[in-house]
Length: 447
Image (tube, rainbow, N blue to C red; front, side, top):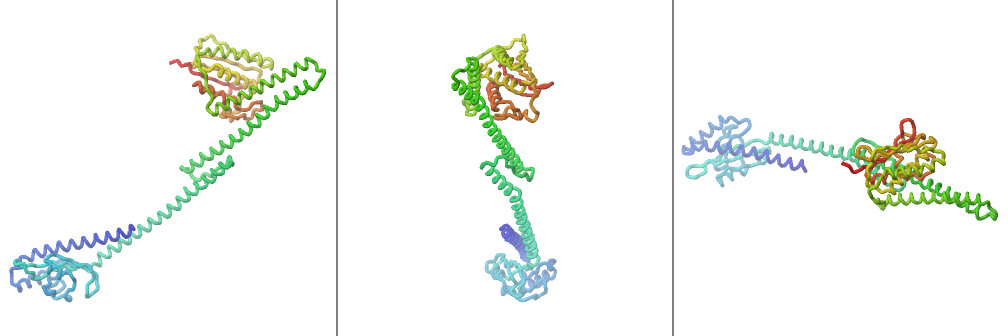
């Protein structure tokens, strides 16, 4: 369509420019000959012959003087060059007494020509002849053909570019998008961990990286969830087995030693409390997941709460052969808005983790300070610490890492949620000299 429109427009432009140029030349020449109109016909005839003989553009144009009968009176190609023209422009110029033109083939030679005829008029208004310019269209047509050929070449190159771009688009966008779609469907169907081959470092490549990362995280979450279910099942089975075993032992014997009975009841009570604690932790996690996890905020002396928790838990750890050292401080620690029961839950959970994962160090230290507008609690064990590659994941839900200690992997996730809801931070790091250091920072609200 572009080639056709260009070809037609260029042809019209070329022919129009040529016609306008010939019409202006014909008008100028006709005005010049107006000086001879009042002469005798013989003098007019001689003037035409002389002008035609001296016409300077005879190599490009043929100048003709034609009588009203249509015969050539004089021509720049010779006095009686060629046969009498039979084109429509002559009769039209005589009839309308205006400049007219003809575009077409010469009736005698078949050559494509353009002719412009201008009437020569006496003062009385009588037309005594026609001044006619004739030119071949060979050169103009050649230019038009060349321009059209160039347009066709440009069109072919454009189509080739479009085809190449289409193939490139299909190869670089559609095929990768189709592959990404297929892989996404596989992931949605349960093939967690499926990966997309990255071809280029562009937006599609970035999308592939994002989906690969998502797939890996889903696979990891699925794995952790499976491990969580297995861990919870194991954690539930252990106390239930102890409760069931001792219950059956107590019920089956007629003559059981009271001391043995008391020992069994103590174990049943301890394991029941352990089950209760696990269920409460799971309920807390469920509330956290569905947005029902709330805080009851009030101004409280966090140091007093922390010290009570440390002293209470220290007595329990002493029975297990672990020493809990509290580093007392004389500095003033302001009251801060917090949920006391939730913060006790955080302190107990972290102390319990320190005992489970770092208890082999037989020592745990705890401290609380007022630092830069925040109350900072530090709890450190002297166990083996956390492998560096596991540090970024230890606070993730269901994550247990390489630790063989009992637990379901959601305690730290709940603790971090509680601390975050207080506007604070909870960080874990390996302490210098061994062990794990947990730091809790809560804002005091001071300016």
